[in-house]
Structures are given as structure tokens and as C-alpha cells.
Image 1: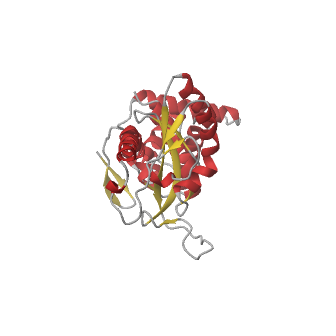
Image 2 (image 1 turned 45 degrees about the vertical axis):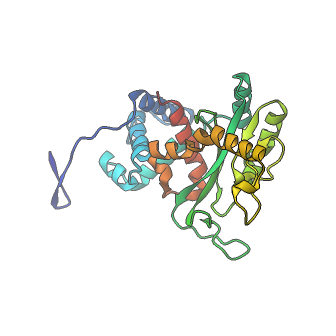
Image 3 (image 1 turned 60 degrees about the horizontal axis):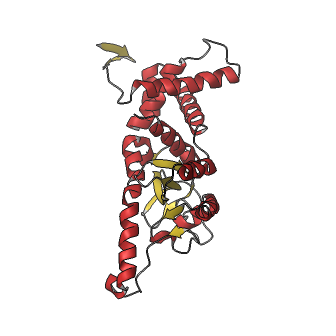
Length: 278
């Protein structure tokens, strides 16, 4: 089927959204409730909540161009951005609280959770550190982005994600800001945390591999220490895949073109959507 647009003939086509229908319906209920809460007159919006939900999910799932999504819906680019930000906001508001997550883990008898950080790539952003380097540039990843911390169950199920810190922020610094105080309390109650060597010095209850002496191989460590390191790596291996799996399912997390300050909300929104995927 074709349509004439601005003097040339464009081709339209049908496509399927690779998301279960119940997720679309779940998301549609959130902006519908939001509209009622702010007193939006019925029928006054360009898109109903279901069509808005489809566009938001297309952006998350396909990393779609906001301009293209707005054009497909017959709305302006500004309205497309407004609907997208609204969808992100209502989803992020459903994300679980850190303390509630840890309480639930203890109630379910989990022996540990997995802590890790990941860089969500973004466009270059103005901002300079005290040493003159770019604030949002990660030397570790050689890329611009935002650092988020996340917790996962032993089997790799994502549990919680933090707000964003600039990409130059080391994992342990971001963890100290957002998650370590709660993990200390959880450790005192019997729930340990496994992390990688980037969290050495994190404190009591955070189990990390022992670093080999500088200039030496792993064999410089005694047999018991090597066995403990191998055990920690094995037990946290599935949790380490959590960020990669979230990025593959919700491709908007691979590179955020919105304001980097929204990366935390975008990651929390993806976490909520992932929790409803059956």
C-alpha cells in the first residue's frame, strides 16, 4: 500500500511488535491511570493509551527513531518525545525499592545476590571533571555513557537498578552512592553479595576475588585462595550476563540518544518491562 507525502510516493507496510500482548496492555494501563490522575479530558490526546504504549515499546524493543515513530503515528516530533518521556516515567515509577528487593531475597532464602555495573552508551555530553577529562567519558570502555549499578539473583534474574552516574565514575564509587549501605545491612542479616575485582575494598559482606600480586600470575596465590576465586567467579557468572541480556531484549539500552540524565529511569523502566515478560 502506498501513500503520497510531500510530493513523492512513500511505501507503507505492516510490522509485528515482538512483545507479548499482555505487556502492551500492562503498559497501556499506566498512562491511562496517569491521565486520570492529572485530569486529562477523555479523547483529548492524539493517541489513546494503547497506541502510546505500542510506540513506547517500539522504542525500547527496536531502539526506534523518535521522529519515525511520531511520523508513523501521525503526530508531531515534539508530541512523540512527550509521549515517550511520559511512558518512561510511569514505568520507572513501578520499579522495586532496593530495601524491599533485599527483604524479599532474604524471605525467599537466597544465599546471595550479584552486584555489577554496566555502561549505557550515550551521545557525547558537555561536562568536565576537575582533572579536565570529559565527565561522561569512560576510560575503561573508551566510550561516552552513564554508569548504572544492578543487582541480580544467583540465576541471573535482574532485581534492581540504580540511578545513573557519569561514565567516568568507577563502579565502586557508584556502588557507594547507591547500594552499598543497604547491602551491608543485608549482609548482617545473612544475605551476602558477590562482586568482581572492581569492588575490592567495598566492605564487609561484599565477596570479591582476591587480586593476584602485581607482576605475578594467578599461581602466585595459594591453592585455597585460587579455589575461592574460582568459586566466586562461577557463582556470579550468570548474574554477570544480566546487563547484556537486558540490552539485547530492550535495545534502547545499547545507546541512549535522550538526555543521559534519564538513563537511570530508562534502565528502571526496562527492568519493569522485563519483569512482566513471560
